[in-house]
Image (tube, rainbow, N blue to C red; front, side, top):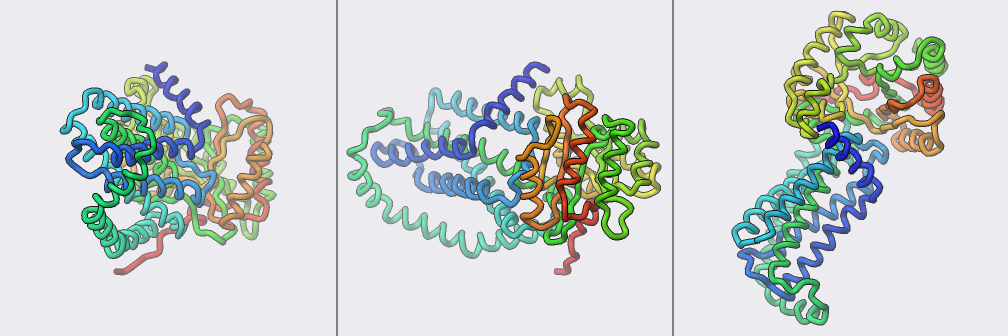
Length: 457
């Protein structure tokens, strides 16, 4: 079981070397092949392929534009563990479609096309909501839902009538246009002479767009967080305030004078009435129970504590073999315990929980619902930085500078340390990150991403 998980993770490192443009090119070529073959060599399919191809092409274009013009260039919400699961799911979708099309029949192709077209249309709606929210730079769940409602209104009043007119035009003049294009394209050779090539290209193109589009949407927009909780990927812009976040487990590796150097670097960054520049520290249930004294000292220094969903036991996670998306009750229950332990330790209720990516823990709807019921907000990030090596690279320094200056504040910077990192270099790199954020105030998550403005409808 463990070996299969490692193989899936290796697929992620291979796929990530390919550009997103390459991922869009393959289904685009299949769509072009579909249109060409449908015109030159029409088949016995009981439906028109033009509307379906149009929806697929529009979705593909929207995905590409959304990815290219996204607000957070270095804020991918999927870490390597979740990317490997996306690769596993995408390969499973394509293999299932390929097996089903080995002996295609009219009913098989029709059922698969309807199913995939429904998934594709849902993806198109989700990408349109996310793209509009990204352009307007919505802060938190409330603003995202407001822009999504406005976008739905635009769909109903403007886009839907245009789509109906387009389909009516195709229905009335489609045969004439097809005859003209057939005369023009008849000089081009057929790639495959089999009459089933249209059904094959149609199903595989829809499957590939879905396999690429779903992880893309999840990596750019926390759709599940917006649906089930109060989620934030960033705070208000133009405030010069930044939330710097790190894991308690990473800070624990720096001992003695090494950890003291981190606190001194933060104290040098204090502004105004601050006793120190604030570091947001993510702690788990186990860390709350094992290290209450160390955590209390960090709070006394002026730093902010937020919760992290607890991971499952190793043998339980291995038994699911990469399908840990189906486990949610344990992490939800552990969040209840962590909430209780936090309240007992500090005398007040926690307000933030990290949407952790590892093994899908923290992304399950049941946990989002529990965090909302407990009155906690869910923190994602606008900049994700994994520190490696002995010091910050020039690329990492450029990422910090560009991401913060682009919106002039409101960034949530999440820093993680590789497990293989030597303990004596952790403090040096964290201090470098703090020094690189010159000109900005390091604040708590609550001060950077404030509550949604109340609206009375």
